[in-house]
Length: 268
Image (cartoon, rainbow, N blue to C red; front, side, top):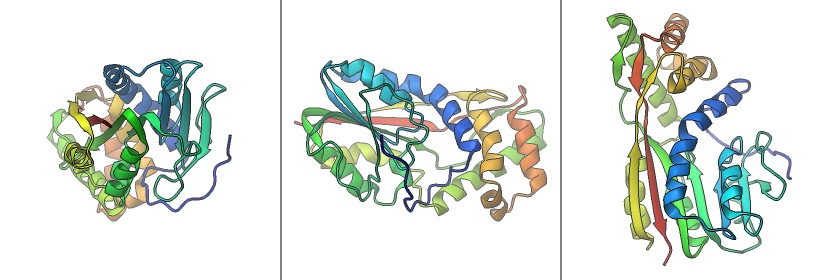
């Protein structure tokens, strides 16, 4: 296993201990979605898989179960210190923008990236590289969030709380955009995969509401601390952030979560 090294990145969502809590919440929310998509691809035992942006390693572990001992999994990230995987999964510090493709030139039967490519300016070039790393018949599964507008509040303790959360949500998206994320990229992936020659391209969209004190609402609370200075630069005050934290933990609050757009295509 390689040790983490420094890579230049404008990715906004960094900083321990918040990143650890963030990964735990995201895995709980998104892993069932990703596992359902992988099930639809019918990943075979013996397949060769690449997990990009492995985070805590939960999907790399799942891929290892799917491909079995006769298959192989490579899990890559800029920081591999949190990747928890069984023996046999190769873990590499890797920058998908600049580093050579992992795996000594061998092509992959399945490549997966979740909530990664939308944050990278060279997203189209990276998508092309990933399509080129597929073996014949191999699948590329890219999942990103679509979030062009403030999240819709479904219920709130009062009108002031709803308005405060909407301002926070809009500021969050501005922080992401200023860091180089494309919050509308997810709906471009289908067309991009088709243009790259991938076949059987399909897009599935998942969204649901999150209630205060659970799921995505816990991330809102985390982000009030993780992105404190960036959010203040967007005009929010510490009182605003404290209010959002209280709202996000209040069971009387609920809001829609980002759309998770899962797009997959197969190399001929």
